[in-house]
Length: 168
Ligand SMILES: [Zn+2]
Ligand SMILES: [Zn+2]
Image (cartoon, rainbow, N blue to C red; front, side):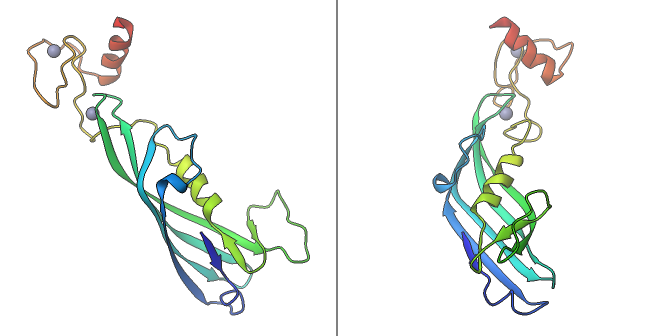
């Protein structure tokens, strides 16, 4: 995911679009709780703002996981907007504390930035769909598939899951 910025860095105000498509298995995101499937597409543009190069775009990925409520496997799109400012390190030493990234040799490497954004985008709760009904805490049936006839005093799915865990 390297962008050659030799041209765009010469002229203030100039823009350079980019698109990368990489198989998800090539991404170094092993710490993810879910799996990435299909391709990861990254599209955006580099803008020369006179002081630095602004890189912004969107990462389109597909995640596969198990639903926290009903435990069914599912996959869902993951769209992540990102933005980063890059400065060239030619003669000055990179300042690690500054809120910018650095590039060298007219080349911006996006892979690290993309992987970082994927890791930060990890959803706290993985749901197969927003209104997933989950498993019945009493009989264990998947309530998305078939309704059961248990009486439910509380239908809070968090309590339901806790009860499920206590039972095991
Ligand atoms: Zn579900
Ligand atoms: Zn039930």
